[in-house]
Amino acid sequence: MRKSGRGLAAVLLALSTLLAGCASQGTSPRLHPQATPTAPKAQTPLTPEISDALPPLSPVTQKTALVQHPMLTQVQMVGPYGGWAIEQLLHGMAVARTEDGGRHWTTLYVTPHPAIQLSAADMQTAYVLLSACSGSNCSATQLMATHDGGATWQSVYAAQGFEAKAVSFVSPSVGYVAGTVPASAGAPRGDLLATQDAGQVWTEHPLPCDSTSMALSFPTAAQGWLLCGGPSGPGVQGKALFHTLDGGANWSLVSSVSLPQSPPSGPIVPGIGVPLTGFVHTLFFRSAQQGWMGLDRGGIYETTDGGVHWHPVWQPPFAPGADDAFSVGFTDALHGWVLYGEGPPLSTTSDGGRTWTIVYPPLSPATSISFSSTQDALAAGWVYDGTLILSTTDGGVQWTMAARAPVDISSLTVVGPSTFLVLGQNALYRTEDGGATWAASPPPQGYYPASIGMLNADVGYLAAYKPGAGRALFSTTDGGELWQPLPTPFSPAAVAVSGNGSVLAVGPASQHGIWQHVFNGTMQEIGLSPGVPYLWRLSGGHWWPVRIPGWHRGQAPLTGLRVGQSGLVWMWSQTQLWLSTNGGASWQEMRFGDRLSISDVSFTDPLHGWILSAGNNVYATSDGGQTWREIAGSPTY
Image (cartoon, rainbow, N blue to C red; front, side, top):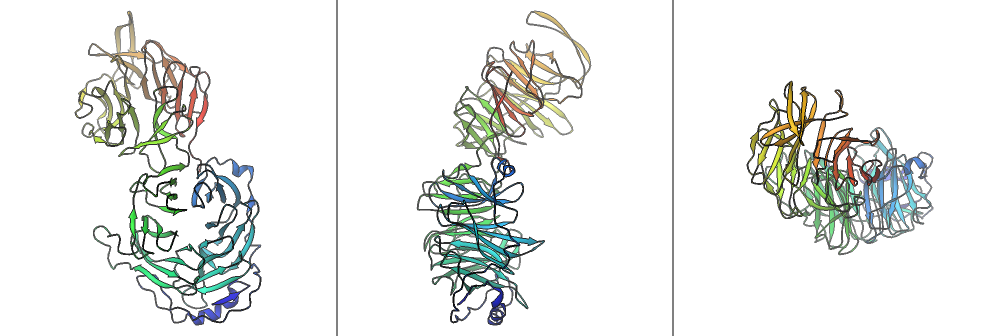
């Protein structure tokens, strides 16, 4: 063991000689023979070596504060409600803190430098590792610390030539930093820096590996684990897990796995050691027996015997395919957190991991929205995939996860309180128990579903598209088990069914012609032009067109249609919205300015309506569309 007050530069030669006999690289992480402890040197205060190269974290600026919901790249909770995080901003990175269980984060300080990892001791003390990179060279490290809840930050370690990989603080004063140091000849060397006095003095220990990827976790001042990544292949990486009982002075191998000479055939068997699948990212031990490992493209694994055996943890809301685990851990036996998947969303548990709740970023609709009253609605939302079904009870201000569909949702149709259908790219699914179970209803062969309208749980209509054949309309009388083609004189883009059974559709006419018919007791004559959209009403087995006022050639095509009660009908393009109060006989265009790009529309009566924009923002009106206000927004990264 060697103690130094000036970092690593003064001891490179001595440690290089000491580790000259290290093993050559193989298919597992390169392991070094244990260094013989030496008499400690006198402890002297640390003198940062590159403090000018890595300036201190900067106060939050107004430009930074404009980011509504920054993306979190690492989270560490220190209690059921309090925690710290690293944020990815539009320009640079930041440290943030939460006091409500992760639902809201306060950005404290920002930096233009990459923030490698954060370790928090409590709500007042946190440490963050910064790296100064020049291309692929990131061999400048600075450790910043706060002891007043993030109000002020100080540099407690800085060194040129030490590439930090991981940090773990047990208390406000006791902590460890793992990294590598370039050797004068040959491979780099792994080193552990330890402090007992909040970074005033550091003790150096050689590590048993020199991996480019490391994860470190110390649940106590003496006991810790080090996970080292080795050579990698497609989706797999050799790994070695080490354990120390004396603060990093000595390490013993707990479990390891080597990269096979050929890709493994079949599934990788869990529970026999550190997993081969995935890449080293995060490690968290809560006690001497229980710990979690988060792997990029590998998922989350848990051990209950100190790291000897590992078992995969797959529980809702985690979805197969969204398998990047960035942070995972528990503050006690019941309360835990995980930062997982694309985005990535933050989920927490209060029952030991049996159930999980997405708490950040705030959920919001993305592709479909359906209000049943001025307060209640279901919607299709997005977090790290497009399978979420959301619900609201406050008019769309806040959304919670209600169910998960088996397919990315392009359209959601609510048939009853617990019965609804979802359309995917080439799939139709139905649930009658609020999303607990789903049944597939294949669309007509070769067709991609575009729009669906249901009169009840059994009778409905489907507008679909087939490459090379164009658009077509189909009907069902058995809830979507079978679909029968329905001839139309137009190309259906959307279809809807009213409560009295009226079937409406929108789309351009198939050919030129003069169309005469009686509508609401009045003879109407319409000159049809291909490419021009019309509203079509099915009556007596025939389709009757209605011209759409305010639509001109060159404008966005009609994409949506929704039928309400008492003759209310809404239809829309990406940039225009029309309302009819008499079943489509006459129309008025609603104005909402140029700020919206419409994805979906839902009205409960002529006055109260909602627009879901293409930017995943929800806007509401209570005066029939004369004014609109934003009530919910998607995360801004």
